[in-house]
Every structure is written in structure tokens, then in C-alpha cells.
Amino acid sequence: MQEIYSQAQAQTSASSNKVLKNTYMLLALTMAVSAIACGLSMAAELGRGTALMMNLAAIGIVWFVLPKTANSASGIYVVFGFTALLGASLGPTINYYLATPNGSQVVMQALAGTALVFFGLSGYVLTTKKDFSFMRGFLVTGLIVVILCAVALMVAGLFGVNISGASLAISAAIVFLMSGFILFDTSRIIHGGETNYVMATVSLYLNIYNLFTALLHLIGASDD
Image (cartoon, rainbow, N blue to C red; front, side, top):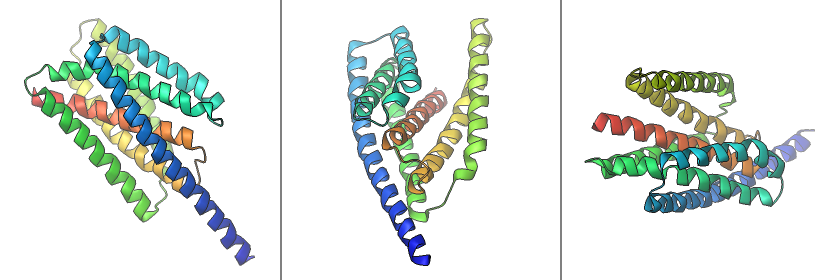
């Protein structure tokens, strides 16, 4: 009985390692695609309206298209399209910061901070093998609260209410939430909770994307 249990553990570990390897390989490729799309968007000087449409299209893809293709080879192309849209949508935001006096430093600091947080937290989970599944309820609740607050601030902004301070608070909350999701999602992969590397890649990509944009907002505000 012990031997069967050990064999099952070994098979689970081998499967998790394969998912982890494929996830990081696909994640690296999607980050490259996203960077290229962002560079093209910046060069074309796309407007914020176009960026918003790209964000909405990306949301539609991840909600309606990806679940139907995640278990097939076409799911990889869907992920590339999704990350290209989100990367291109960042163009106007980065152009905005680059136009400020210390804009290039702000962007580089946000990139460096994002890389440091991601590799640090992922490395911690991979080294310690800790299970962070207990964080699920807290993270989901926090995400719902942040989304509702962000929508409320958008509505308040339409009526001329000063939302700069509250906006910074939300960005700080996003940084903490995405850090928690990096721990949670990496833990799910190595413990067999996520067996589809396409879905795992999308989860980690969104963590990185949201972490970067939140850090960009915070660092840009502090620089001002």
C-alpha cells in the first residue's frame, strides 16, 4: 500500500513539474509578444480609447474563448492574441509616463519592481514547496472589493470628485493582492491544483500585468 502511495506521489510530482516547465516557457513567450505589441502601440501612438477597446476585447477572449480552447493546441494562439491585446493597451499609458520629466526612470523602476516581486515570490514557493491554497478566500474577496471600489471611483470621477488619493490606495491594494495571487497560483501548479499550463500561464500573466500597472501608478505618483 505504501509503495502504491509513493508511486502516486511520484507521478503527481512529475506531472506538476511538466506543467510548471510548460507554464514558464509559455509565460516567457507571451511576455515577449506583449512587449513587442506594446512597442508597436507606443510607436503608433495609439489613443486611450483604442486601448480601452483592446482591454474589453481581451476580457471577452479570456471569459468566452479561452475556456473553450484551453485543452487544445489552438489555446496557445488564443493566449498569444490575448497577451498581445493587453500589451498593446499599455502603449498609451507608458507613453504618458515617458512624457514626464523622469518618465523613463519611473517605467524602469516599475519593471524592476515587478520582476523582483515575481521572481522572489515564485522562487520562495518553489524552494519551500509551501501550500498557499488557504489564501483563496481572502484573495477572491479582496479582488471583488477592489473591483467594486474601482468602479465606484470611476463613477465618482465622472462627477468631478477628486479620487487621486483613493486611486493610489487601490493601486497599493492591487500590489498586495497580485503578490498573494503569485504565491497562490504558483503553489497550485506545484501541488497539482492546476494541471492546464495554458490556464496557469494566463493566471500568472495577469498577476504580472496588474502588478506592473499598479506599481507604475504608485511610482509615478510618488515621483510627481
